[in-house]
Image (cartoon, rainbow, N blue to C red; front, top):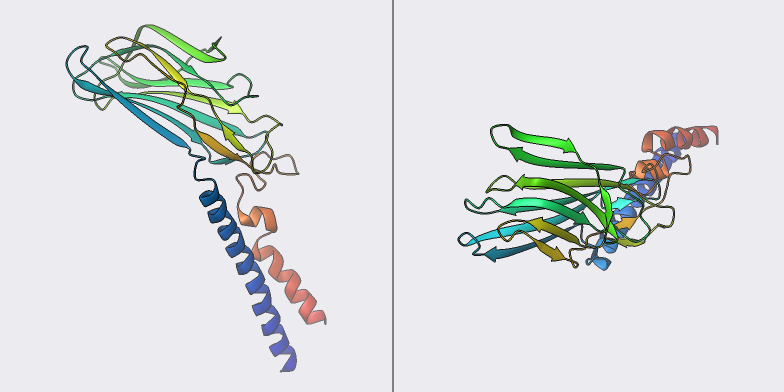
Length: 231
């Protein structure tokens, strides 16, 4: 009976450790998020133009994931949208990644073709004004409900360390009907994580779970039982 009581107490104590660790991680995550409120993954901007009647143009830049370690891949999306029946043509887009990043490893544009619906296409980038640019003439058409999305993926360089706030530069858009704009302040941010020691990018504390970093309950409990039963 005493052994059973001791076993139950040991399991309860172990459960508290596991849950407590999870709570601590959650608390740390919340504290980090609150302390780093300025590290935003999305920025939005808009402007109105009367080039062909009043309408608004919207510009977003988004980065994901929110946490990434050296060797991971992060993706930036540049989104251009319009309201009403405006149909500006976007001729070119320029992205400015964080300092120290290399060329994008993937570049795709999602847009709508007249009579062809929504399509996603690989597009080549060129170095331009310290960033990377895509060009298309006669242009990608943007209409209400039909946004243009340019997605670029970059490899996170080794210089990014755990806890770093990695901020990008802005964007530039060229085209017709007033869609052209330069937004140097369109900066987004992700937080540097810890790379997996086993060489699996994203498998450590960067994008992995608490189980991945600390061992799951199913891994820990058998050892606890063994130690208690053998004592």
